[in-house]
Structure formats: structure tokens, C-alpha cells
Image (cartoon, rainbow, N blue to C red; front, top):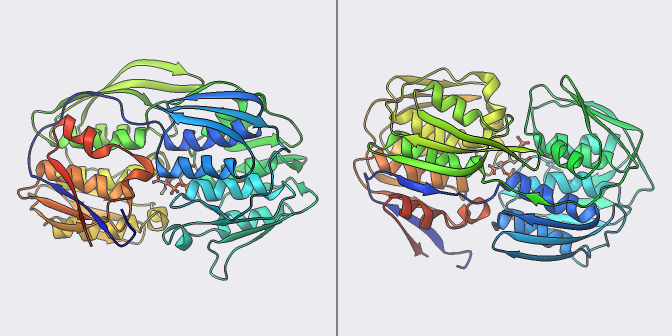
Length: 442
Ligand code: SPQ
């Protein structure tokens, strides 16, 4: 599809979700598996890798820095690690597409390599704030430039050495934390990062899995520079952020009953389950097990009468990517749902508060966006209509699920970026019972 074409989802109203499925691999863990596998000594085998555009952008970036990577082939990837100091200067800027995780984590991982590099992204990524990573990296002695407005391209100049810092994160962000931990691998001394609230801890878990000790004391995470990583095998669970669309869809659509297999339920990611259960959802967490240092389970979801809630602020970082889907659940619930403390949603692939509010209003819902959240008066019925995802994968998939409870067809514009995190979404959703088809318009 050329960039001038508009991928449109057309979703018939009604239906139910039924069956047993496995959604694709976790995006956050897939990125980190390529990064750490490349820096390790030895051969890393990955299974369950997400073959989406975002994680593939990370994979291609390491290939262009001289790392030999086989695959992905049915989720399998083999990396011949080059060690912490084995990366080579790429011939061209690293194009990270739509992926904030790639750009922010790579800025830290690459800042102390002694290489000259440029990181670029698409128009959405080029509008997202990058000083949140470049400011603390500069404190560590890195030379990383942004544009005047603090956005990509990021230009990294070689430096002789980085030094460790003790840094208090101004926002709860796993990307800033991970960026600084990865820079800390190359810094002299102990890098210490204090979080205002817990955020996803995949980087810490995976570093430990590669034999690189990371400590956590209360809300402070630390590591010492100068160590090395030893290759290992990684089994990536299904992505709870992708499962979230089905958790919501099966909850709101009458007569639904699904099982989502092998879903990662890391406690720093499971806010969507907590929030939906507070709203009255019927979600059973079955066969809890540990897979390579990450907790995994099968999730059974049956339709339920949802009710509105005040979303606890401590759940916000634990469900940060699931709010587009949760807003759809709230619009279908009885009573008011109120979200506060979620201003970060405004600087994702789109302004997820405004874009969801606009689309839900088009569908007849009663919603009021606020600077740091939203108020949704549920209970009314959703009507059909045409909404715009603004190129944001999570908005597109959230509105697709809304059709299960709408009274008319929903058309969703600008959906091609669904491939960044959930390749095969429309096929899997159709198999589950969503009446979705894909068209293209110029
Ligand atoms: O990679 P990107 O584009 O930033 O992706 C998103 C998403 O919805 O897929 C955010 F828009 O997920 C981030 C998430 O919001 C992935 C992530 C990670 O892997 O570390 C952390 C979160 O971002 P942040 O800014 O809160 O640290």
C-alpha cells in the first residue's frame, strides 16, 4: 500500500467473540530481546517474536549495525551477539518508523558506543517528545541532539565515556528508565533511577536473564557499568496489550466466551485486567506459570454487565497502552467512568485522549476530555459512523471492537499502522467473530 492510500476498516455491527486464540508476541519484550541479544556474547534464540513493523524496525537497526540475525521465521529469531562493544557504524540513518520504544531505548543503548549515528522516524514519531531521554543522557556525558522543538531526528556524536547518574524520573515511563539503564551499561559507576510509580520492568528482568545484575530497592533501580551479557534463549509471551482488545470485545458483546492463551501477565502490565474486573468483567486467570522470568497465563473472558468506575491512579502506568480499549468498555458500561492522572496519553502515537473522545462522540457517546484524562458517561447506545484513528494502531483496534455494541456499521480511517503491533489483527478478529473487512481508498 502506498503512503497516499488510506487503509479503512469496515466493521459490521453486532456479533459475539468465541473460541481459543493466541495473539502475537509482546512488543516491548520483542524489542528488548533484539537489543540485548545483539549486545550479548554468544547465540541467542528467540521464540514468539512479534513480526510487527515496530519490532522489525529494531531488528533492522541492529542488522545495519553489523549484527547477524536470522529470521524472523514463524516467530523464531537467532542472533549472533557481537558483545557490548561490537556494533558498527551504520551506512545510513537508522529508520525506526512509528516506534517510540525503538527510538528512546536505542538513544540510551547507542549514546556510549563511540559511534556517530542518526535516528529518524515517521511523522508521528517525529512529533513525540525526546528531551525526556536526551536531557538525562547529556547529564551522563552523552552528546545527543534533538531538533529545536525537542523531537527526532536524534543525532548521536561519539564520546569517550559516559558516567553514571542518580536520576529521579519526572514521569512514570519505562522508556526513559530503560534508556538510562541501557546507557548505564556503558557508564562508569552505578546508575540509579528512581520511579514515581512502577512501570513495566521487562528490561530489568531480561538484563538479569542475560546474567547482568540489576538491583531494585523500593522504587530505585540500579546497575553498575562495565559488565557483560551472556546469550540465552527467550520465549516471548503473547502481548497483553494486544489481548486487551479481545478482553474488552468479549466483555461488551453478549454471548461471548473466549480463551486467550499464553498471555504475559507481568504485574507491571496487568492494569487492564484489574480495571476491567473493577468494572464487573468476568475474567478468569488460568494456568499461571513462569516462562523465562515472565509470568504467563491463559485468560478466559465471558460477556458481563460492566459498570462505570473511578479508575485508580496507581493503575494508570500499569495499563497505559490499554486506555483506548478501556474507553470503549466505559462507553458500553452503566454509569460514569472517570480517568485522571493520565496526561501521558496525550503524547503517544496520537493524542489518545482527544482522538478517542472525538471518535466516541461521533458514535454518539457522552464523553468529556480533560487535560489529564476523560469522563465517560456510559449506558447510552453507540451508533454507527466514520471515525479516524489518526494512524494510531491502538485507536483503530479499539474502535473495531466498539462495533460489537454499535447499532450501525463503523468505518475506521488510517488503519495501516495496526501492523506495527498486531499483524494479522483483522484475520484473528474475524475468526473470533468480529465482522470486519479491510478496504483501501486514495
Ligand atoms: O513504542 P511506542 O510507540 O511508544 O508504543 C507504545 C504503544 O502503545 O505501543 C506507546 F505508544 O507503548 C509504549 C508504552 O506506552 C511501550 C513501552 C516500552 O516498551 O517500554 C513503554 C510505554 O511508554 P512510556 O513512554 O510510558 O515509557
